[in-house]
Image (tube, rainbow, N blue to C red; front, side, top):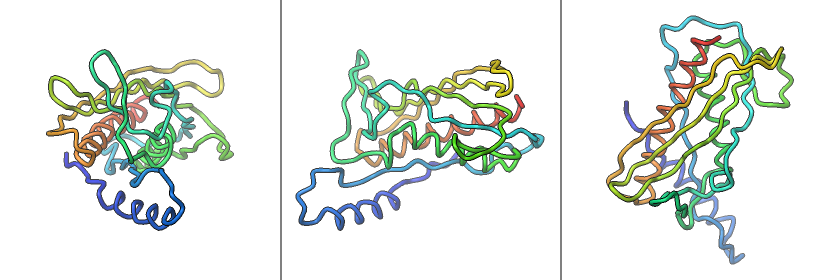
Length: 199
């Protein structure tokens, strides 16, 4: 699987930020990063008549932020300076999970809360890890717990933990974000395949 670089997105957003903050002395991030959503997902799987609601993931405060996390030994968090996610990480991941499910073209509908869709299932998620781990070799690590809930009776249909790890040659910001994007891509693809099989 190829890794999609986010440099073009970063460059455009950086230019916008520089233009917007010129002359106002802002100390905000100089670049914002987004994730990509995998395409060509669910090939060979049957279509489903289900309509899926995707709430924003639950996350600890250390990850419920737009800061990009670095985890050291003992789960000590720090963050990359002068860069950030394009929104809080749970909102970014929610948007890409919805986009991934839509990219399957297998569901009748996929929505976030408040969009008025008559729902069959909720896909509830928890961001357990979304960081660059340093020490003993740098690597991007993403771990997401997912639960599929029948919206009509509130019963859990299935639950599973998804994870992916991608080595990175250095903790340079661009390389680290590229590795995080690749790990996220694996997790998003696996979740979409799992939901298709479950509903």
